[in-house]
Every structure is written in C-alpha cells, then in structure tokens.
Amino acid sequence: MMALAVGVRSLVAFALLLLLLVADVGTAQERRAGEPGRFDYYVLALSWSPSYCAAAVERGRGRFPEQQCGARRYSFVVHGLWPQYESGYPENCQVPPPRLDRNIVPEMLDLMPSPRLIYHEWDAHGTCSGLDPRTYFATIRKAREMVRIPDEYADPKDYITVAPGEVQSAFVRVNQGLSPEGVVVTCNRRRLSEVRVCLTRDLQFRDCSGAARRGACRRDRVVMPPVRGG
Image 1 (cartoon, one colour):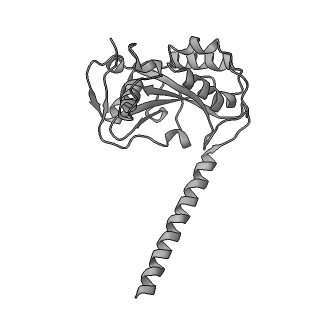
Image 2: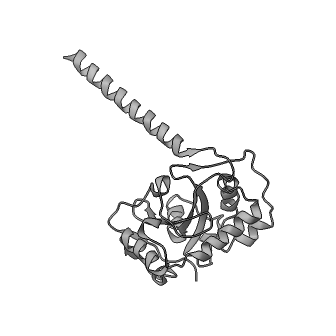
Image 3: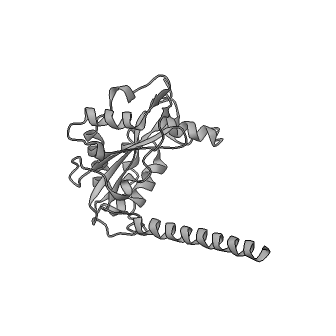
C-alpha cells in the first residue's frame, strides 16, 4: 500500500511537471524575438491609471516616482503600442536597442506619464515596429487620437463598479468602426486594469487575435477607482 501511494504521488508530480513544461513552451511561442518591422497589427494598450496607483499603494510604496500618481488627474493613459502577430507577438527585436533621444521623453509625458515606461516601451516594443524612435512615438500619439474615451470614464469622481462587457460596449459605442472583437478589457483580482484596442498597421480598427486576447477579464464585475488629484 505504501509503495502504491508513493507511485501515485510520483505520477502526479510528473504530470504537473509536464504541464509546466507545456505552458513554458506555449509562452515562448507567443513571445519571441522578431525581425523589426515584420508583424501583422498593433495593440494600443490603455491603462486605467487610478487602478495602477491603488495597487502601488497596496504594495507599500510611500512615495511614487511615477508622475501619474501625483496631483495631476489621469484616467486612461497609454501603456504602449505593441506590434502583434496573428498568433503571438515579437519583443525586444534589437539588443541592445537603438538609443532613445531624451528629448522625446518629456514630449510624451501627457500620454505616458512615466519616463521609465517610455524607455521600456521603446526597448521592448518600439524596436519591433521597424520605425525610428521619433516616428514610433508619433505613431503612438496618432493611435491614441484615434480612440475616443467614453464620457462616463473620462473623469469619474467616485468608485464605479462595472462589468467588463459594459466597458467594451461603451468603447464600441463611441468609436465608429470598432467592433466588440476589437476590444479586450483586462483586470486584476478586483480592479479594471486596461482596455486594449487592436489596430491595423495603418491605424484602422480591426479584430484582435491570438495573444492580444489573452488575459481578457473573466470577472462578472470589477471596480474602477476614481481619478486621483484635483
């Protein structure tokens, strides 16, 4: 009987190890080094800034290095513009990456209120776009101008509890040509994290596929903390 129990435990441990190896292979297939400029479409990731700052408080950061968690009011901010494949996505396509002109950083802080984020997005995603740094960040600005934020999420003064589908529908309602399949809403344990909008290479709305849909929020309801500052 003891030998049987040991054998069962060994089989369970082997099965778990096999599952982890399969998961690792799947992740590596989705995220892989690519050739700059060779991709299928973009994902514009819009982060709900109040959720980010609330999570930072919970992690115990007393003072925020990020501009977005200060006195200025931020709602949706640009997390990034990510080249995608129909299945998977490229990342860190040039190592070391071409140097980013420091003058670009202050020009982008109205959309991406963190210098650290701006540098990271260039290294990880901008290098896969096939664009030079200034053109890449100009493309981010143009993509953000393409997407209208629903009025109810522009500057909420109190906590809002929403269904992810409600947020998706609101973006579809105010953006002509955007379909429900072209918007992905993500969340953490209880807060809305991001709205991701899929765009063609020439910045037209299109449906999302593959890795762009991974991480879609499965919760019935999530919270959107109010905009900070005042």
